[in-house]
Image (tube, rainbow, N blue to C red; front, side, top):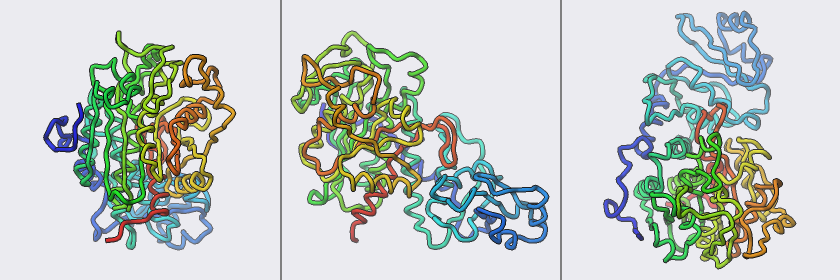
Length: 491
């Protein structure tokens, strides 16, 4: 079934009243922001007690700091008393003068550690935008099934001169991606993911085309169909477009595997517990798309989401099968649990056909990436040195770090197959993230710039600004790069 973007016509039920609708997210976000004219408790970021901070405090507060023997280690927080007995101020240690380069989202620990009330950053901030974004990011809670009990959160009064619209857009895009990843697979399958894309399109005046079920075969997306055909929830390719046709072409492809059992190469139960997050690449792609459209960026944006479940059934694809791809290359299946690169390959082939100026993939693709760099630092792959370096720098600046890894050409040999054009995995335990990236690169030949983010999409242990749960990694990094490179549309 092919469906264009016509609201209320042949589309899944709207998510307008669901917890992860854009309108609901915006309202949720506003509960963490104080009114502009509100009286607020000052919050000082302190790198050293020798820098004059004590002179800013009154006598009672200075005595309190000394009596507590407080030191400004990274994340150390101290509430200061007012003469009335209420909270009169807050000190947050940065551990030195390297903030925000080190621990960029440090201020994100404050919303969960402070009592209810209105707060405002005091003194000079090296990066007010990042400090406020971190506060809002740290305020996030996933409340779809368990409404937030604290009706009086710690609220932040935005500093004068701050681009509040930009900061709230960054936070809302982060909330949007987190909510999508945190929603369990029983409530977020391919159809619901499509609905999220349609809601996004409706918000910004984009168009959506969907190719679903057996029409994937008719329209030459055979690997998306093969991966998703074992599920009773039809696979689909979701294709969003926005912007002027003659603008620079930005195409973002996000892996939308809504649940991954591993297929016939089934995962153990412990590895399946987090597989609702296997559509984290789609969430990151949609978060980035939100920011691009919200900013009115002068691009022709295209977002491609191959959405499917990797299930087990009599018609599931098998290890040893040879699949035809959209590009014409034949692909031998080495392991059905490496399904993400298969659906991405067909979507990349479609994207590459129009030679976009920028082609980006976001995918929760390999466990090897976590072994190499851990959960917080996604690998970034690109053959374009200037592009890769700028993306990495943008991620650092916006508290969304990535780290460049190589498209190491000699490992391309590891994808050889004796019966097909290539195998989709290498036969060995080494360099799994690199070989997965090399497989994707086989399907890109015309794009002017190509980058691949192998994200984890999840925070396993809470850190400042990042509560446990879904995280659309790389989205803010890409947006920060695009803002510097392409800017904002005139008018």
